[in-house]
Image (tube, rainbow over all chains, first blue to last red; front, side, top):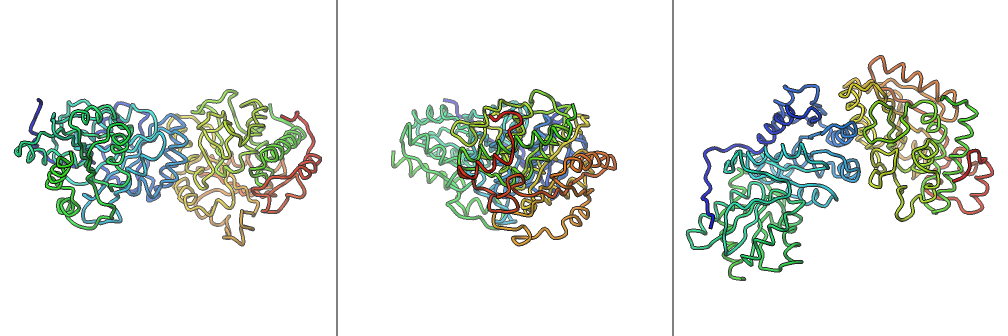
Length: 319
Length: 281
């Protein structure tokens, strides 16, 4: 059984993974262009802007216009990456994405920072917890929520050679880097971090680290957890999910998102249709967030390792 | 290749027949705005735009056209077909099940001539700007044309786009407003007036022309002047006065024909007023 204990030496924000990935893409592919709605620093797009000023478009505070311009750029063969906060990347511009990008099947990469509750002190106006749901409902949209700096960089680079509309979701806080630069990353293919027998834990984004922390506690209690990173919420790696649950016969899912419309609901659809087992969805319980420090918010909104541990015990009772 | 005005008139007459026949057959669609933009679109496609014969999505080395007010799809489809993008027989599938001629233009079914979906208003100018910027990156000095509705100017995104294009001195885009003064709920001036639209557009940094959308010479001259003006480094917009329903007397100048089809008798009258010049589909 492969059980690696995950640790970290460094913390870094996932948005920096996006910025560094974008810079690398820019060097390797001259069709890659970037658009930003007055948040160049927050999105870590400054180096791309300095390196490739002719391929960087400062749109100003006009996100709807940004989505339309991105759609138009694809017509001339460009691969546009738009950058703004997750809230302004989705809810604010849903119809523009729906008509000009998704329905028109344009090769736009919508890159969204400050997603989820760990945005912190800015509070609920900016802490979007509904974006995965909105984006995954759009036919043909790929939805990715990487778990740390390295994975975000890999996902950004992978999007450079992916065709079709995509939503890349990442965050603001400094977060443990526990994957390796050399890890393989493939859009739509989940990654098994830890082999286990008793329960499958599916996690996405920042919650992957929380799940790994919970696993350490549970391991000491003699519970064998299989921890799987579902970085791509759509298309969902159904094969990996079913294979794991076929072995463990129960599951929990973890996401920094509303339990309505997120990863958990996608997994429950697959399991409900094909392999019904006890399942618990961990996420924000259909509420808005609030101001606070990211780690305090994760505890208050029950997105912490302790909650995951309790949920695992509860699901095991129902097995 | 440039057509005489008589030829443009003949094409327009046929396009008007196509419009009313399409909308009548399926008893659905938007005849009013379509008839009003017929003379302009015929002139643009047959005498102004530099177009390649076969359609490629990327539109490199040719002029491109974007329709932002997508509900006037009947005129768009008819003009595309008559300009050779697809067989005119396909016009009879307009708004039917399994058709490439969706209620509002879409790329989803792969209809040649369409580069983006439109219908939800306010988005086309932004897309046109993106296409214009891609042309610049590709060192392609062809022009992007875009048509907007006047009621559509009430959408906020249009003003985001206007501000951006002028700030970035986009000198390869010519926009046209179909200024028929009507929208679904009544006169634009009564619903939400565009008060001093020319001043607004000029103050946003666009070069503004005014034209008569039913006078071919005037349309041609305006577009020629627009192209010349682009060289001065700002985007150009053309406020084009049109008559909603133009060419079918009982439809003219009324918002009531924005989105309703003629009945059998009305169709007869409409067809009598527009002669068959190129063969009905």
